[in-house]
Length: 291
Image (cartoon, rainbow, N blue to C red; front, side, top):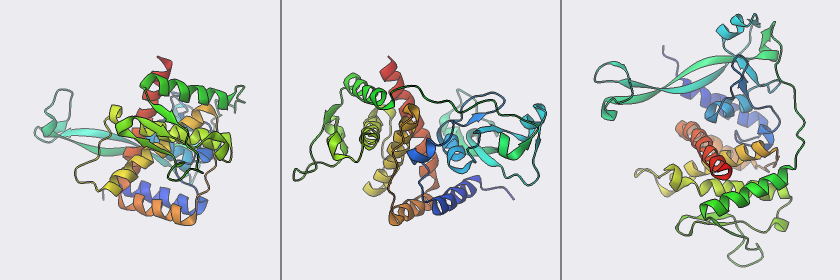
């Protein structure tokens, strides 16, 4: 029987949500572990795979190997070790019944999900040593994050407003596409600066939707479109918080967690596509600021 990797992945994520009472894109959780890397190539996992390993992995070293890589490096997988999936898209040319190639007619091709398994070096293998140690950040994360926010807004023409929550009809955080405007309450109305910065990140990720081509499908209801975009913004903000070493703990209610769990179960593509879209948005934001 062909393994339904998408269904299995969503099952693992929603079960972890229930036991941890955390969302997969919780910035507080993501900051508690090193960025997941492949232990042989030392390349970072990105998008949905970064989320899978950060949320579902042990976090002991966040260094992973495939079965074959473990053997090549002189180690072996511990008996009973449970792997985690690394997923990727492949394309097939249905007209010519072969793997799709660059230049093929898009109408003749379709994408499908594939996966391979990885194991955490310290927790699940024998004979291998970790290559990284936890590095103490010697920087000013909040100052750097706020400089990033200011630079991105200036370079992309985003208007930043800070209306107080005490004003009728004002004070919530949102992005208005028609005005290219981000509204965030003043810093002093947040419980801490970390929460303020995380909210700015969230709304600025929304502001990349047009540039990144994140358009609502004609079949989507307004609520579905909103939910899809929220996953992108939530995960994008978590990625930026992690980038700057900022932890913003979310006060997730049981109802809020249950709502997202149900939505992810019913729409597994939201999580997969949303995480990858968030990664693209953050890559774009970093390019803009660096440029």
